[in-house]
Length: 71
Image 1 (tube, helix red, strand yellow):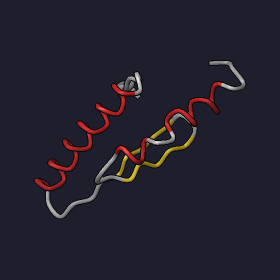
Image 2 (spheres, rainbow, N blue to C red):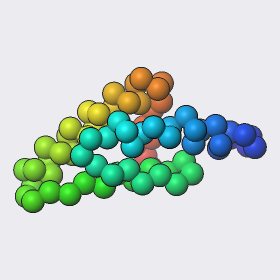
Image 3 (cartoon, one colour):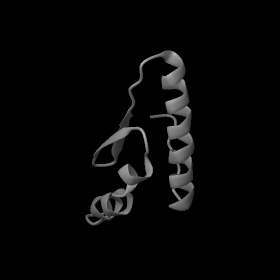
């Protein structure tokens, strides 16, 4: 925070996030990331959502990052 290089280094650090997601399309801008899913029914969406959360959690752990659930 407050660093000139900080935002650039963060973007470089998380640049591979889309490769970690299998069934979703992450849209990243600065330090914000939105993950979009689609499906034909509620069960398919729930299953996809849970799989993507597990994948995201593994990515975050491997990169020593944490998710801010308050945002």
